[in-house]
Length: 141
Image (cartoon, rainbow, N blue to C red; front, side):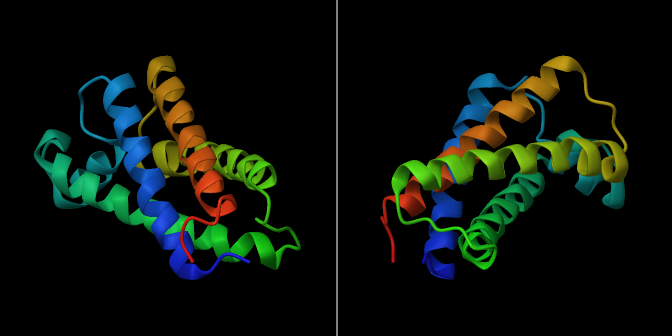
């Protein structure tokens, strides 16, 4: 069973890899979380790129802990790397769908274009796969 600390560490690693993928695939604009910050703070999302990125990193770290603790609670395990990668992939897809439907459209209030959705989806799948691989390999704990 993965520990909370392993999930937090996995969340850090997966978020770093995801962010690199986001920078490679992205449009050089601020992350969607910058739009969330600007929605509440006022102003242009470009002004909140760094706070938005910090918020995104926090989300990624917490989501890693949720995954590490939540998977065993539903009766699954992260003991094999192949199984953990598969569960991570599924988790990344859940985060992707939740982010597209709840965060982008409902909370932030944007209608993302096809390119944004493709990038958003890809980086969340990358996140889940890296998180699953990290925890399945037992690299921390």
